Length: 98
Image 1 (cartoon, rainbow, N blue to C red):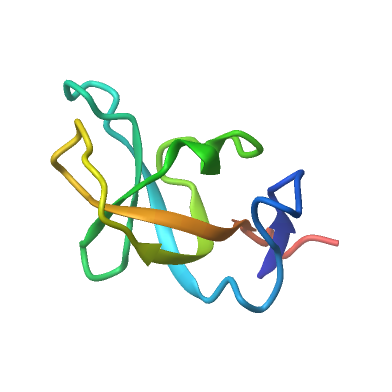
Image 2 (spheres, rainbow, N blue to C red; image 1 turned 180 degrees about the horizontal axis):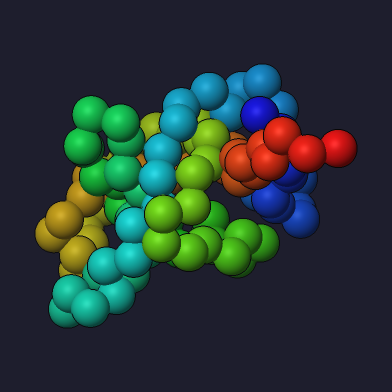
């Protein structure tokens, strides 16, 4: 498994071993008030603050590692828990070819 950094501004987010929670990007833009959310392996969905996507290009099914904290804020998307993302990195699939 290769982990590629996915953020440009280290002041907003960091990359490294502190990204320790696996998640899958889910595209919920078809739902009113929703966009991309993160889904944990146990099925819990997280609604990250918009800042996370500024230096990151999400797509459906994308595998990432994150570090987050649940926050108390209103959201128009009632599908996930509001969270602040401190760290996000994309997990690049390995092809097994050299």
